[in-house]
Length: 393
Ligand SMILES: Cc1ncc(COP(=O)(O)O)c(C=O)c1O
Image (tube, rainbow, N blue to C red; front, side):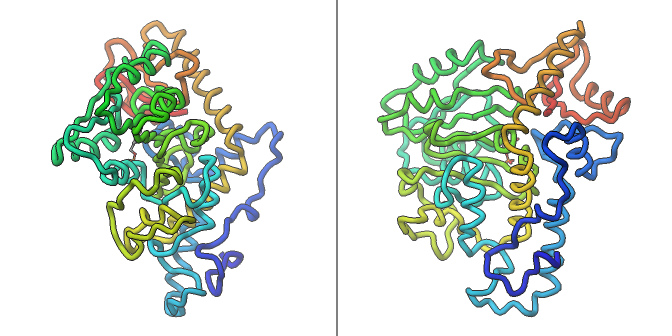
């Protein structure tokens, strides 16, 4: 922390801690073993529930904790002058951090709002759009509650129509999903909200092809990328969506309490803020969605933790992580195929697979399978349904 020093400081938040970590060379044969050693999880325990909550690497955790401690030590020196560093989050623009995290989505800083999680981002879009009773919103029948709840609330309160398309468990192929959305669009369709990767079965949805369906139509396209950031590369421009919401506390291994919402510069004006404070009505051209970051005092150390998690991620490299995640999930799928009683519920179509493998054993309840894996081998998976466990590699 001495290297970081909170006072006096010219940035909104502390700089990254990466230089203090002695990283092994990328080609080091023990590279991944070293990465494993950066987590506080005991050696004999294996964690496969990143789809719920990522494990925060020790250097990230230490950076966060040191920052929080430093805040407490130096709080009496804080004079609230704008040229001095902030002691809490929620009021400054955090332009540097937003520019940095934006690169993970191939976006720019002003297109990113710092939120708390994917659910908050979906709420901001679902609440923020001008919609009339009878206007339709399309989604799949496999949304996480955090992605459908915000629209269902508006349906009950204001009479919009939420249509949940039965895409198959899992879908036959990406074409069938695209066809289902294409056939469901009507003149009343005003928004589509689709997951990039579904929560329970880890289905990769062809979101770029869905975006093509709405091009030149007055339909707002939100993608729920809660399971994607940190797992694989995201390019919101290549997808062509209007908004993209994420939960960095999963695969990006950031401390919980951080979220990112991308809204394309072209569509930002269409969103009313859901939470209002000083800048709720600012439509400054260069920074359209600072308006969506008006939630009052927050914990600045969490942003320092997010910053450090991005460094940790970038030091390894997004593509290298994506390859590793797929290598491990392919190994899991191959192994399961050799077990007679094992059944894979996740897709096996190569364009729809990812690092989430949901599987079961015939005749064994998901909760029992989860407990057995833990009790016998200290392997943590998550039971997600009557007969399934979800394993995040
Ligand atoms: C696909 C998907 N969307 C949304 C969410 C909600 O995420 P959060 O609770 O971080 O807002 C999850 C959480 O597991 C998810 O898997």
